[in-house]
Image (cartoon, rainbow, N blue to C red; front, side, top):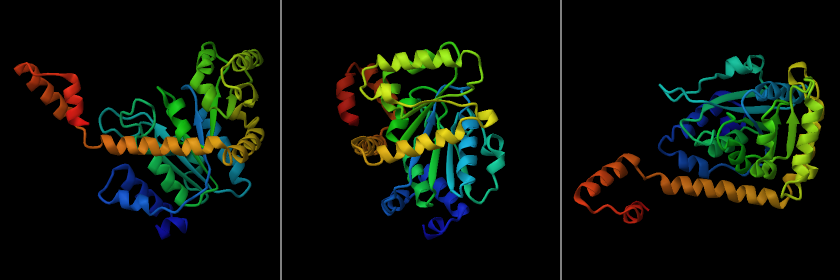
Length: 294
């Protein structure tokens, strides 16, 4: 732990592997972590929105100001070894050897929500290294847009001015968790029309805070709009870190960890064998089975 706090990326990488693979004793390690206020910034949105390019640009903005940044990229899993399909060297090779940037690619490992099952613990380990910011980029599938609300202090939802993205923006849950909407690839001709439609959708939403959510245009590939995005993120951090929403997010994290702990001993294989046995002898009852495993 002292090595990680001293800034050793090698020690940090080993600690993350220990937690991700749930090596014996990792729970005790987690219980000894000191409290930290290092902000977690979630970057989410549909595939192809340019999230990785946007993250790369944000890192450039902060590094140029002398900030230290940690990045977690959650990628799809390989069907053969459950490892990440996209590697950090490919995505953000500019920062791979930079002394102020640490990048870790994580696989979803079959998680239907699009986040790594140990992401809560891993982000807290990242906080131990005293980064100025920790960025978490989701794979952009399933319910990851909603799940990341229980993880991030500020959630940036990245969209592109393409047909169909209005449906993404209209999700009630998405409006609830977004602190900032970014319309990337804004050099496309229909970007302004898309932003107008997005504002209409937000103003018609059920959340009172929705109409006031910032909407920003960026063209991440050309580094346009990124300095403004950094400013908005920092403004949102000053609000959310001291708001009631922050306490709800912490409660959400605690809930997921408790849920994970309670389910740790439940084996689907054993459950299936019991179902087969009970069906064969005519004693199967779903609710008795659930009680048995509960």
